Image 1 (cartoon, rainbow, N blue to C red):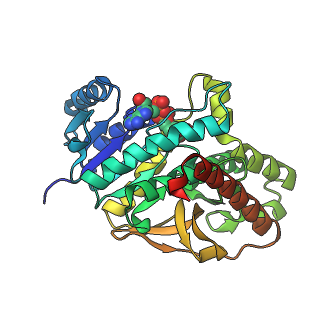
Image 2 (cartoon, rainbow, N blue to C red):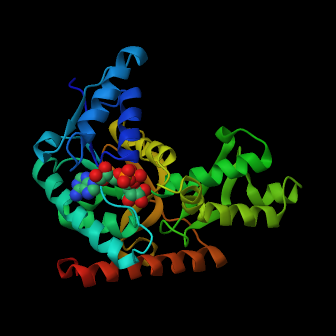
Length: 320
Ligand code: APR
């Protein structure tokens, strides 16, 4: 069987880490694409030279031409610019929307059968625009946010309970940003829900509330520490988990930014919800019961995403 092909659009911090992980896990041969000449070629060569030491079998190629992504099975998109001081939200939207347009056209032309995972921020609006610009089926275009947000939540919970991260499951829904909704009721240690653990005296509601807030601010906390960039190890790992579920038909149930066609009472938009990823792409959107503050938090988050979509439509009327 021929090796799978993984195309990474954007060869920056996350793109390079994605290439490293894809090669280490032997998910397939990797093409790292960027508009900057030399950057993807240099990173690919460096990574390829780690192959003999690690013993992985994967070819790595840097590219500045979309023709090199031809026939990719998976495309992971990190292309874009981060928000810089003095840049308004609409400035950032305008720039990254243009990037999504060129990336979408490149994917449509050379990798129309790929499973596409978008990471570029603001995530929920960018993945929605990327699907429209590429014209790929909605079940083949998804966004990575919930896996990362849940991983942050799991990490903090494991520290609080002093248990292995392996035994902590957690759910974060809604848009990627400070309106995300970490669901404490659906988060557990080896099946014991967090509210029960509070009753058992393992923690207090105040401490869990602080963890929920820290999860919401997870990206900003890292930007504040790094000062010159944003998180890249955990975002890359999270997208690779989604890619692996598709390539190996694992049927993982993961929170992802997914197209909604009536689920959760929403239509024609992308927002973070639990989905099953298998060989068919997004095979199912799982509708869980949301109560009280969970529901109002989700609605608030959905409205924030709609606001971003409206701003995108104002910038590029073809999206309307
Ligand atoms: N086509 C392809 N690549 C592009 C384009 C384009 N039109 N425009 C910019 N790029 C490339 C840049 O040259 C850069 O190498 O995208 C890369 C982005 O890399 P970084 O700036 O290092 O950003 P990174 O940390 O990888 O994050 C990428 O993911 O989490 C989000 O907010 C983050 O939107 C950002 C994205």
